[in-house]
Length: 112
Length: 114
Image 1: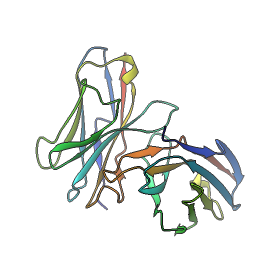
Image 2: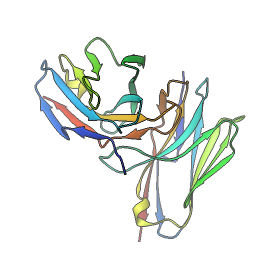
Image 3: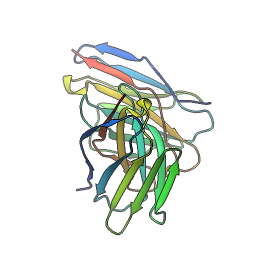
Image 4: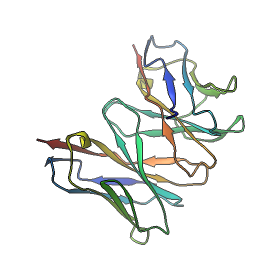
């Protein structure tokens, strides 16, 4: 069964600190991997999209990595801000029609 | 910046009633999707739509569900006879040229079935 597993489930970090979120997937076939940010009660917003040939992609203070051989990805948040408090969701596209498999998300809380 | 819009933001309906959730995708987008998120759970794919027909659907998308693009701007999800377990946030999304590209999500419609 195609799965996207994320860890940790939640974390609390101090404003200004860095953190790294993990994603493991067993989705096959694999088209691309995305990281989304979802604020409570809102729709997901795309942060990065990576195909299997890409190892890293950055979007401002967000840097995603992908190891397609081990089927692992990470999202690194640098110098966290209060507005980074949200759920970060790892999403894998399993085919050319854009069907997305979502992870359960990591809930990040940034405290002053 | 163009965005996907959804109406209503919250819909309350009685079990067994029909509901129609509406979405206006970004105007030059060609691929459209519906997802749902039950409270506290992960987002789940329902259906993708391209060229006026369903391109893929999940096992959740049974005969109670249907989608339509009635005109050049709206994309709708109809649930014929709602069940309590249909209570969820429903997200519409659209993408431009290729479905493997960026998908832009709307703000969602919270459906509550009583």
